[in-house]
Structure formats: C-alpha cells, structure tokens
Length: 280
Image 1 (cartoon, rainbow, N blue to C red):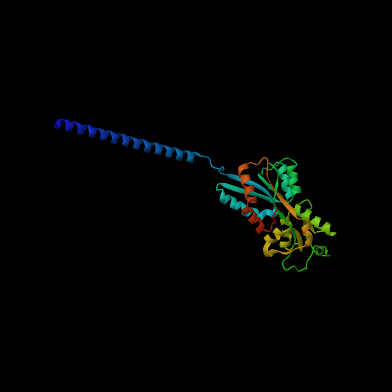
Image 2: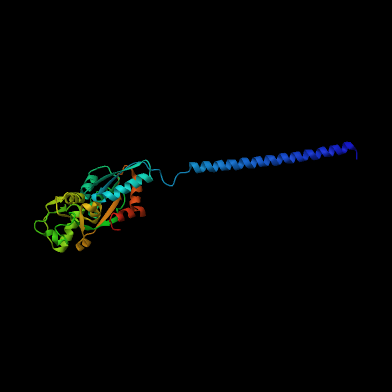
C-alpha cells in the first residue's frame, strides 16, 4: 500500500471522529438547554402560582359581648401577628346594644353575642352571612368585694336586707340569665342598679359601690384580686351559649372569615378556656 493511500485513510478516520464529537457536543448542548428551559419554566410556573389563601390586609371590625373583652383582645393581637398588615378593631358592649347597632347599619365584619336571643335580633333582619355557630358557653357567678365581708355564700344571701346588689339589665344576656336563676330558685331580688353590660356590674363591686353583683365566671377570673367569687348551684340552670357570625355587609370579608376561624380553632379555644369559658 502506498504512502499516499495510508495518509488519505488516516485523514478520513480523523474527519469521522471529529464529526462524531461535534454531534455529541451538539446533543449535550441541546439537552442542557432543554433542561435549563424546563427548569426555568418550572421555576416561573411556581413563582407565578397563586397562594392557597389570599394575603389578608386592612381592618377587621368585631362587635363582641363585653364578657369577651380580655380573651378577644388577646386573640386580636395574635391575629395581627399571624397576618401582618391587618388590624382588629373591637367594639365591646351589651349584646343587645351591639345587635341594635348592627341592624341599624353600623359597619362591622363579625358579631359575637353572649346569647342566641341577641344574635337572633341580627339574623331575623338577615344581616348575617350564613348560620351563626356557638363557639363557647359561660356560667354565672357572684362577685363580692374582696374578703366577702357580708358572708355571701348563696344566691339566697343576695336577698338579705341592706345588701347592695347590682345586676345586669334584663335585656342583656347576663341579666336575663341571672333572672332565670332567680326565678328557678323562687327568689325575688331588687338590685340597687341595673347595668347595661356585665363589665358595668362588675365595676360597681370593684369600686365598692356595691357589695355584690351577679356576673360571669370569666369576669370574676379577669378581675383577679379586685373581687371575690362565689359559685352557686342555680347557675347551672342558666348557662349562656355564645354564637359568632360573619356579617352580610362585612367590609373586609376574607379577613373576617380568618378571624372567626381563629376563634374556633384549637388555639382560639385554648385562650377562651383559660379565660374560664366552657366548651360549646
């Protein structure tokens, strides 16, 4: 074989190897590009995907029974912590007054009442979105000045001559419950005053303007050493259910739903139980 023929074959082999290498490099480049494009597409899809729940913002206005003040204030702070950019604004008071405000057009997102009867004032006007749900219950207790100097030991003791007793107004859930307990015991009691909400009744005792008041166990606990609590068996006959509802014309519906969810969650129930509320 001549030298020129061998040289030609060698050149052909080198050319073939070069072409194969070029094809392999091209394939790798294409594969890498496809992989990168796929990855970028995937990342882009993930970043553009919607969250499972919308980001909450703005103010949530909650109308709540006065007896919920301490526990709901704590839950409001927790809600704001969980949802930066939100604010919870509370209007605490007698449930009957709050219900009248709502049906009168006062802007609010959530209503938490101290009795089904006061919630019915709102539902009868079709001002709720959906059916109210009972989230806690509450029981009555007698609050006396510290040391209980008048030795109040029963509901009957509140009828003693000269004892200054305060009750909630009968239109307010705590007042209606107190009257129910008195009626069940066959007792008649004339208080020195009727207060518009349970905190008003409790304050009279704290300021020693009254010797005793019939309030909720949760209020006695919240007052600490400012009052002394006296339990009475008749209170078991007048336990109040507390319903909560999203309002139909809620200005901040999504945040309102989230607040109601927090109240009903295990976390919310723990806060309420620690405040002395009973489970629904």
